[in-house]
Amino acid sequence: MRHLNRRDFLKRSLIGAASASPLLTMLGSLQHLEAAQSGGAYKAIVCILLEGGADVFNMVLPTQSHHYNNYYSARQEIALPQDTLLPLNHTNANGNNPLHYGMRDNMQQMQQLFQRKELAIIANIGTLVQPTTLEDINNGFPLPTQLFSHNTQRALWMMGNAKDVENKGWAARCGNLFYPIPNPYVNITVGGNNMMQLGGITEAIAFDDAYISPNTMRYYGFGPESGGSELGNVYQNIYEAHQNSHHKLMAAFTRRRVNKLNQNVALKGLFDNVAQFNGFDNGVHESGRSLGRQLELVAQILSIRNNFPGQRKRQIIFVNHRGWDTHASDNKHQVNYLSDSLGTFQDAITSLGIANNVTTFTISDFGRSLTSNGNGTDHGWGTHGFVMGGAVNGGDIYGTMPALYRDSEDMWGNRMIPTTSMEHYLAAIVQWFGANDGELNTIFPNLHTFGTNHLNFMR
Image (tube, rainbow, N blue to C red; front, side, top):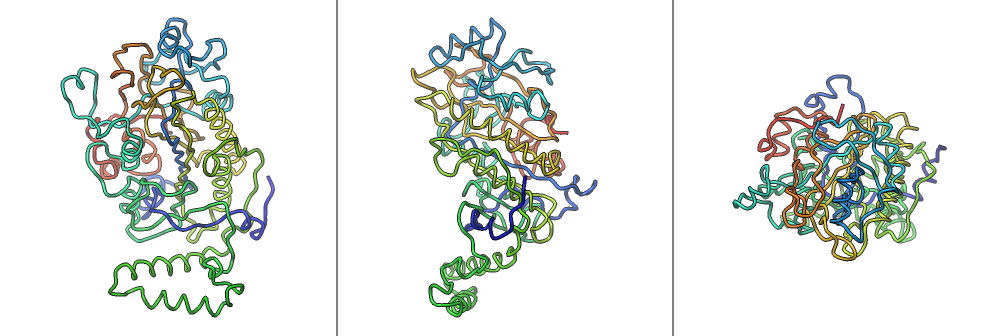
């Protein structure tokens, strides 16, 4: 690992226009955070959206002959060969999972992280109004709205409530609860706009792969090449003069512009001594900015975490990995790229000496259908989450693994019924971050529906 000066790094990175406020803002008023009270150690969480609905049933699958044969019978042409699977040696945290599972053969990095107890699998999570079984569904129990719809199910994950409509993302509710005084420097996205970060008091800082000038007016096209810095000053004066305009749209627009200009001034030296890392791959056929480039940028941001004004003790970063809507494939490329990228990212975090302070986790629209459509799989419901970091009780499977066979009691049609709610999954991570039980129920209003037993995959 070597260090770049600010000018070199600025040629590669852009602080873009802000998106909505993420879960970072939840960190405010550190006296509310138990973790900060008990030592004030730095913590960050990195949320990776597997956009499109990941086929986790070809990522983690049973290896025992009887259970594997049931899986093979259900998946048929997209089933993976039994003798190629990478074994997972785990202690069965909850006492209700068969002991023999394996990962796909191109997930070597994730398998090694699991074996080193730096990765946990959270089984069969999803959107639920209340605990639900197949019998409950047949009896007409309430279900999340528009099941199997990409946009709606992704929105429910981002809003953190499958029962009621929210106008703020769960991350924004965190921010508004813990940071009533606006603080923009703990909210970061490298994956673009997302509903998780919608509706907070403060907006996220968006980082991108482009050029940022130390001259804040040049960022808006008002540099010397467009008429000189005096022109920039004129525009800034116009913006400031209209912040309190009676025209609401004009006032909102100019306030946003002035805030952005002021923010760029405040962050002028942010990237001094930024680190550079080796091994991140841009992938092939990636849509949008590649996962490797996003995670490399996250590692670089974490390397200059103390340069942010106020030296915040908490940061939450959003990452978006696209391309998981696999109607005509079986996830092979995405799975391998995710595994390699996670392994490289964890190595980078370890090299910074903050492996115990950074937790990375995945979310997705939904899982996929158990049965094949002939080429791939269709929209499903239950999925698995992967949680990585030094603070994770890794090397185990948490929750209840579903039975993977045709007409399974764990299925509705050909889709797995979640046995763990997304709220319980997210709440365990936010609790590690520092929220107490009362705050968790404010952040996730439907959490109480699923009981008080917390998932114990975080230390």
